[in-house]
Amino acid sequence: MPQLNPAPWFMILVFSWMVFLTIIPPKVLAHTFPNEPTPQSTQKPKTESWNWPWY
Image (cartoon, rainbow, N blue to C red; front, top):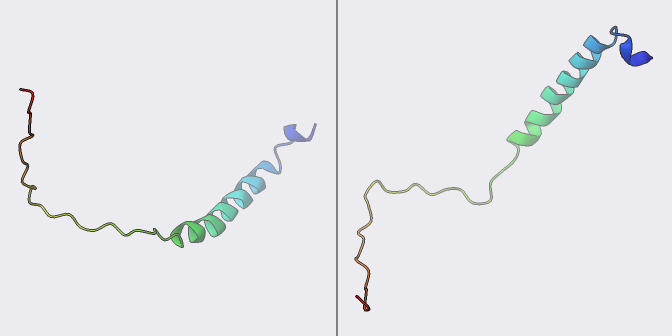
């Protein structure tokens, strides 16, 4: 049973992390959001009271 042979485990782990660290980050960092968020003002908007005609 080859899965019980621990010799290649370390190299498989190192190779998989090298793949993750060299291929995945450029793809994630190249992502651009379609809508850039606009900064919100710190002032609270003036709220108006609701019209309750049945009260």
